[in-house]
Amino acid sequence: MLDIVIDSRVAEISPGFAVKRLLPYQLRRMVGPFIFMDHGGPLSVTATNLSALDVLPHPHIGLSTVSYLFSGNVTHRDSLGVEQVIKPGEVNWMTAGKGIVHSERMEDPALLIGTQLEMIQTWVALPEKDEENAPSFKNYTAEQLPVFTDTGIWMRLIAGDAYGLSSDITTHSPLFYIHVALKKGTRFGLPQGYSERGIYIVRGSLELNGITYSAGKLMVFTKGVDPVIVAEEDVTFMMLGGEHLGDRYIWWNFVSSSKERIEQAKEDWKQGRFVLPPNDHDEFVPLPKDKTKPAGGPPPPNMLS
Image 1 (spheres, rainbow, N blue to C red):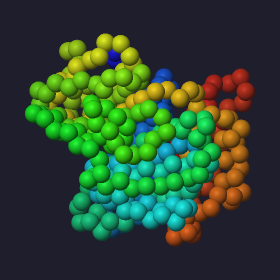
Image 2: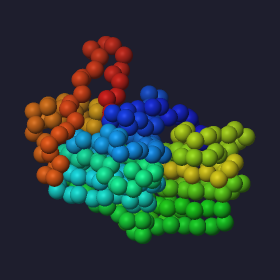
Image 3: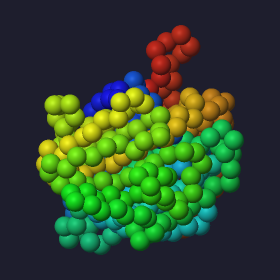
C-alpha cells in the first residue's frame, strides 16, 4: 500500500549543476537498501559552462553507486585506475566498500551542439558484513540488461529480480531496480515479494485510486494490498526497492552502520589518506564543513553531494 509520497528538492552537486533529490528524506531515509537518489537533467549546456558540470574526485565508503543515463555521456574515473564513458541505457555499478575515489566529467563533445544530459544516480547501502569489502567497478552495456515488452509496456531490468526477469549485475542484498515506459492508459502492477517498493516518475503522470501523481514525485509502497497504477499519459518512471538492511548513518558521501566509521572516513579524506584517481588527481572536492548539531539538539542535516 502507498506509504508516503516524496516531492523532489533542488540540490547542487557542483557549481551550476542542480539536480532533483529524492532520497534520503526526513520521513523516509531509505527504500529497501536504496539510501540516495538524484535525478540530473534534462539539461543542455554550452561550451562556456560544460566544465562547470564536472563532479571532481570525491570519496565514498559503505555503498554502491549506480549511475544510469537517459541521454548524453559521462566519463567516470576512479582510484582503481578505471576510466569508463557511460552511455544511455548502460549502468556504472561502483562498490565503494572500504573506500574509493571517483570523478564524473562531462566531456562529450555532443553536449556542446545541443545534445541533452539526463541521468539518475542511486546509492545502495551494503550489508554490514560487506561494508569493508575491497572496492570494485563494472560497466554493463544496455545489451547485457534484460528487456521486456508487451502491449503498452517497455521495461529494462537494471538490477535484481522482478517479473520473472533476473539481472546479471552483482548485488549484495535482495533488491530490484527497473526503467519502465508505459503508453497512455496502460495498467501496471508493482513487483511482489519485496517489503519496500518505490516508483519515481521521471516524466508524465500516473493515476492511483483516483489521484494523479506527476513527474518529480517518489511514491513509496510497503507490503499490503498490491496497487495497480494507470498511465494517465505516456509516462517514464524508475522502480526500486528491496529488503531493509537496518539503520545507516550518512554524511556527505559516506554511508555506514557505524558512526565511528563515518568519523574515520572524514578524517582520512581530510588528511589525504584516500588514493586519488591516477588519471584525474590534480583537483578534488574538499571535505565540507561539519554542520553536525551538538548532542541534545535536532538531528543534523545530511551533507550530501
